[in-house]
Image (cartoon, rainbow, N blue to C red; front, side, top):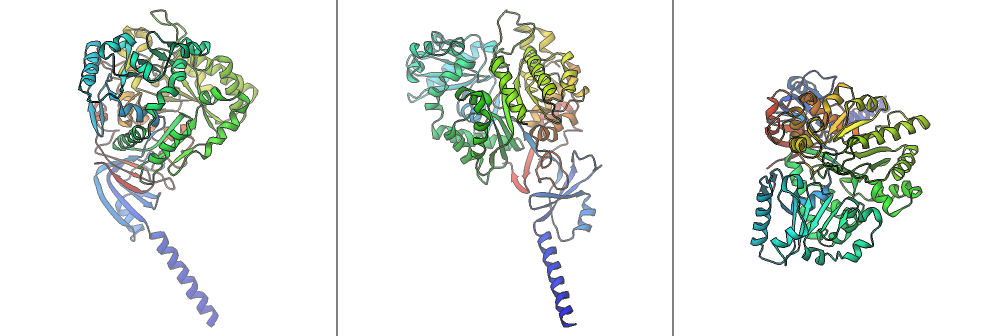
Length: 569
């Protein structure tokens, strides 16, 4: 009897400990409304989190009755909670460099430390560049980003020499696939005629020493020389912190970087800033097969990609079994490869030549990797689908999630093939905002320009898609991306391709649940569901019910990431 008594006391004590540990860290967040994107939940105004996970979603009354020991946080009682925004394709390193540069771009940027206005013609661009140079009080290089030749006209070494024949000037194209340097900059960075002539044939095609212009493979060849300045610790670290602050102020709770630059000291800088415990989001990286193939044989690429898995630290990690491939060139440079060519007769550019692309795709496909592929032209999409179909026939795979990235120019007849092959889309809807009006007059004509990023057709075909900024190619703001996809209003204030607009719910999924699906992380991210990470973005209004033309104007109040509150100042 005595033994039974002590056993009973022991059981009661254990039960009390379980209750105490389960109630520890329990918080109910009350909101005006919660958009869960969980089909099992019809409506809710409160969510219960336990440490870093969602425990329950319901009404405030129900949760208080079921969990009386939970603390209640009602600071968001007049706001709307949505799943944490996901920016599944940005480039922190490129963003760090551009955000720290003098921004003279085709749109204004609202940065934590600076606000720039839009410059969309040649005269205003050159005047702004000249004004910046004149007010510089030291002799350091002038580094600027945002130039776009279709808005600002051709820019050469001679044009920049007129602005300064003494100060090095480095102009980074809006696409970041092109650089223009003046004569002092060529000397400063030790880019000589002999060096350019020593490049391989493919790189020489895109390296014009006389004009100081380097694009695509030519840009990649000179980039290590530029990094001696652009990669300086103080420049890079401050730029990464700017990027972190900018993403946070736009409600981002998780990012991914497909096609990361594989330079270990730069990765360490990313780890230092983005991997810190106080960083308000988690970062996932995916290596670039293009960069790997520059230094290694195709047969070595699997092993080399695996070596990168220990490159991350803290809140930064490389995802296993993912790789980024590249088809054609940049949308902003009009280097996409098009089946019907360009109005002016120029040709696009392949970033990976077809033979290399095919062999690398097959290598990673056979290893079971999820393959993300940079694509901007419809002929490039044809190649992607041809190679995917060939590999599916030889080695069928289910749920392979081959991801077509950017999705600039495509044809309506390609959509059924995308669907039948099981591919998915990671789209940049900002192309429509920035480029559809100009490109309808220059380069590709209205039929193709107004139908670019044809997400309406994608949605009707039942193909899953996410939205990304490719920052700095577009502002890293999920609300701006939603706005672009829903409204398709371009710089001329016209609706480009009305039939290609998508619904607000499809756009919201594109920056939350479907973005997580693209990354293969939907078990933990993308919706407010029991058991998932407690990642929320708190908004002043509901993007599903507000006037669609006001989506981008919704205020971001705060984020909650893995149960931790990060206010937005």
